[in-house]
Image (cartoon, rainbow, N blue to C red; front, side):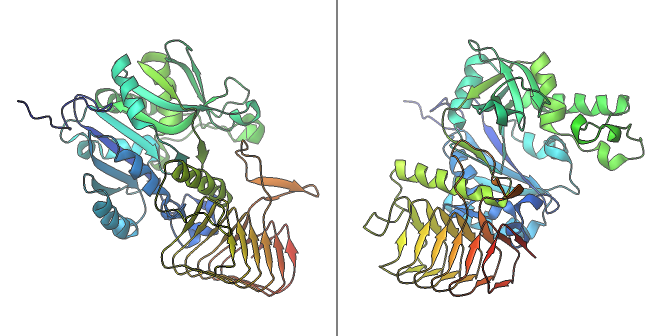
Length: 441
C-alpha cells in the first residue's frame, strides 16, 4: 500500500511537482487612485466582503493542493503586512506566507526576477503570479490542469468584456480551438480583441526567469523608446538615457514579457466565464464587495447574516458590530468591526468600515463609510448605481465626470438631515450642508 503525498502526486489538478504562488502587492507610491481609502490602509489590506482584498487571493491559493509556499512581493515597509501574515498563517496552516520587500519599485516582472533565488528554492515546477487588486473566482486548479494538458510554459487567465472597454486592458488574440495565445498587446490604441488579461498567470519555472532575463538583455542591448499612447502625448516619446538606471530596472510582465511569450512560446489562455473585476479606484471596491458577497451566498458561506425581513442577502455583519433590529440592510452590504447601525437606518450596496456610526433613520446607498465616520440622523449619503457590465466607476453629471460611488474617508461627519451625493470626502471633514458631485478637501 503506497502513501500519497499531495506535494508530489497529481490531485485535483495539482502538478507532478510543487507549485509556488506569488502575489504582487505594489507599494505606497502606487494606489493613488484608491485614495482617500489608501491614505489609512494599503489597498491590499482594505476590507471587501468582510476580509482584506489579499485574503480572497489566499483563499483560492489554499485550494491548490500542490502549493505550500506563498510570497507577497512589494515595496511597502515590512511592518505593514506583519499582522496580516500572522493571522493568515493561523487561518491557512498549510501555507507558508512570506513578504519580500523590493528596495524600489521594480515592476511586475522585475520584482519576481530580483527574488528568483527564493522563489526557485525547492525546485517548483510551476509558479502562479496574481495581482492583488483583482476580484474574481481565481480558477487556479483549472489553469494548472490546462498547463499540464498542453505542456504549457505559461497560462494567462482571460475574460470577455465589451468592445468599448477592451482597449483599457491587455488584449489577447487566441486560437479558439487550441486556446494558444497568438498575440498579446497591452492597452492597444485600437480594438483587436475583447478577450482581456485578468492579471492572473501560471508560469513554468523553467520558462519564466529566462524570459525575464531576455527582456533585461534586450533593454541593456539597445536604448529603450519610452512608450506613450499617441493621443496622450506624441511629443513625450523619447529615448531613455543609459544613466537613468532606476527606470531601466523596471521590467513589467504585461509590456515586456507577455508579447514575446505569445510570439515564441507555449503560451495558452484559460477563459473564465465567472465574474471578474479590477479594484483600481476606491469606488471599485463596491462592485467587488457585491461580487464576493454573491459568491459567498452561492457557496453557502456561514459568515453571512441569515435572511430576515430586514436583512436582504447577501449581507456580512462583523460579530462585534451592533445593528438595531429595525435597521434594514442589503443587498450587498458589509458592516465592519464595532460599527453601529441605529434604528430605522437603511443601508444598501455599501461598505461600512470599523467604528463607523449610522444614526437613526439615515440612508446609505452605493457608498463607503470610512473608519470612525458618523452619518447623522435622517441624513442621506448616496452614490449612483452603474451597470454590472461596466468597468468604470465614474459617471457624467452636468457635463462633468464625477465618482459614481460616494466615499467618506476616515473620521468624517455628516450632519443630521444632510444629503451627500456622488462625493469623495477626504479624512476628518465635517459636512454640515447638502453637497453633490464634489471632492471635499
